[in-house]
Length: 249
Image 1: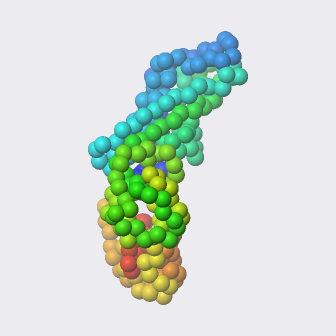
Image 2: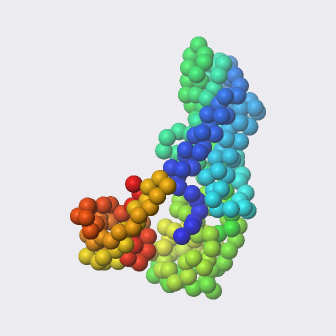
Image 3: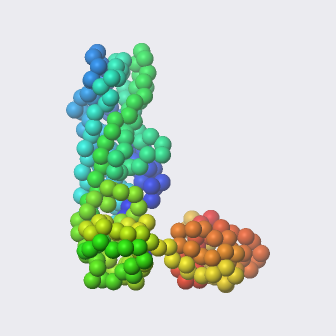
């Protein structure tokens, strides 16, 4: 099932690459008084880097995305030394959208420094919303769902792009009226029980192969399960459907 947003790891790699490009032209920065704000050229580069990173990370979702970026201010208590070159980067572990930060590192100057500036990255796209508040345990049908342009980066969890993808699914928790439906709102499905025979698809770079195996545990959506192949090899696999698992090698 395709859902917004793309994986954080892929998005972070793309944004990190953009950071390297942006840093190549970063202007010099100096501060003589507390409360300094980076000049407009540097702020524009930070905004462009964040916008391009969010767009690249959601490119596989197709057209219709709208990205908005708001760049905050440095802590006014900071007093930074003059700098001849600044690298911009995404700090490890931070998301590429929503409320996040972009790092700015002085690499050429009498006194090197490393700070981060807050940014808010909103990514607007068509996604599924609830027409009315629904409690946990509700089995969803089309009449309860609608599609609207929402900020898919406003909260954790992948937004569901198409209401038809979740018809028949069960809510794992209550959701408010008008709220964006996310994968984390849905009860995880069990695709098979422990001991069942499953189809194992192993995927490598440019190739894939299928075999059969026996599930050691139940196949719960979003949780890896151990599978013993016909050859006796024990693999950690991802359940993908009824009686199916996938392994990336």
